[in-house]
Length: 84
Image (tube, rainbow, N blue to C red):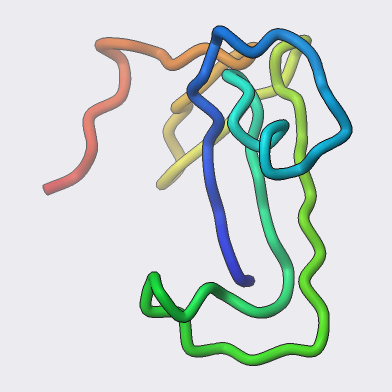
């Protein structure tokens, strides 16, 4: 895995076809398979990088540590506490 991100820009409402913009749409989750960015401390090397974006706004659920973080692309405020 090269990157994992959660889109939080709810001002973006529809896909443009440009992954660098679409991965920021609020209610989406972004996963990149392949090489990580060295500038962020990534050390894995790969000849390929494949960006995948999933839109959770119409029925998706995102879990972290067995707890629901997002439902239908919206954070569950007050129901999820980051461990620490």
